[in-house]
Length: 144
Image (cartoon, rainbow, N blue to C red; front, side):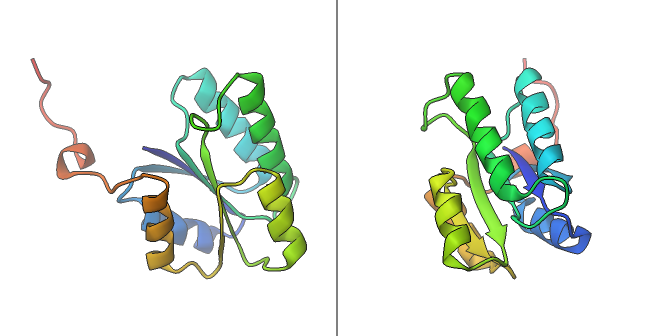
């Protein structure tokens, strides 16, 4: 699974990537603009992200705007809700206006920081994601 972590605080970004690493390969970017660019590039490369964990308060472009733009790109590409990237907002913003805006922007979940590893794992299970098996974690010999 490919995962994009969108977080402007490098310590938080690394912590989230460390928690998610058993589930797949993590790329990290520091703002919403970089997230939209990485998302578009992944689609062009035909290696889309299955999960995006995104903060809200970031420089240049916040997570709410990035969420809207990513969902817009998916709609233009004809992606149905069942095929689109799962987007989990991971933020310290617990005020109702941010929660409502994220849900209206069609995020798939909303977790407050500091992240609780058990809650995050539960959310990933709800999304149908499983930890990588030992065979997926390391490259093996080519199969014939």
